[in-house]
Length: 119
Image (cartoon, rainbow, N blue to C red; front, side, top):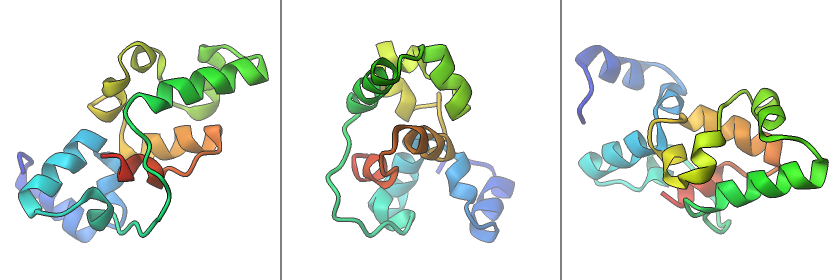
């Protein structure tokens, strides 16, 4: 899976350790394990998946409707997203962890599991 033995041990022995990895890492782990990301993370949702380009639109709309800047959104969500707005795939690579996706989604009032379904 391209990770160290101690990291694998952490994943196996620590609840929610997978949340510290990027969505792209989760995809890679799933390829090795022949699982879907929703299976790996225990997600049982019938919600529609979110594509890689939708987070940028959600964030722009959220900021516009609340009259806040991207920087203010970053402050409240706790994650830097400005670069991902121009290159939406960045959010799924190494700019953000699954935990970061959860925080961003909480701020957007969007179910974070929909992002995992879109992987």
